[in-house]
Structures are given as C-alpha cells and as structure tokens.
Image (cartoon, rainbow, N blue to C red):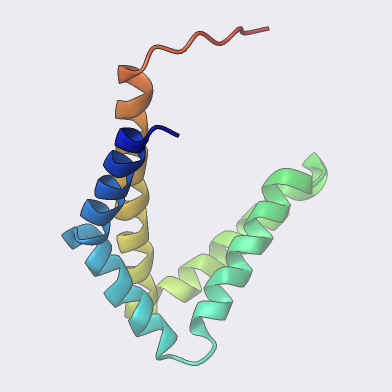
Length: 113
C-alpha cells in the first residue's frame, strides 16, 4: 500500500477512535463488562441470530425469529444492554457512512453477473 494512503487510513482510524460516538460505545461496552454474564448473553443472542438467518429451514424461521425477538426484548429491559445496542448501532452506521463515501468517491469497475 502506498505510504500516503496508509497514513491517511491511520489518521481516519485515529479520528474515529477519538470520536464521541466511539467513546460512547466503549463506555457502554465497559458498563456491560461490569455486569457478569450480560455481554455473554448479548453475544449468544447474536450467534443464534446469525444461525437462524443463515441456516434455518423456512418452516422453522418464523418460530425461531419470534423466539429471538423475545430474547432481545428481555435483554433490552436491562438499561445497559439497551444503551450498548443503541451505541453500537450508531457506531456501525457511522462506519457504514464512511465506507459508503469511499465507495462512491472511488471509481472501481466490477463486472456483475
């Protein structure tokens, strides 16, 4: 990678790490980490969600989706979980915007089939 691109990339990473949205995310993650087992439950819900959306037969999909929604609702009753998920969503949205800006600004010819 060219030195100037590598430096610009490092600056972008540093800027994101110093941003309020990232600091808030870390604060929320730290709050979850101080609650034994809660972050593990959130991560387990994520793993189950991925399994359902990428490997479940259509017959089981609705039932399993409903069960996951119930689990998520239960977890979000914990204020720290709700805050973490909101902060995470905001950070992910920010990263998607940055990625989108790069994709729109850099012309790249990709064949589509």
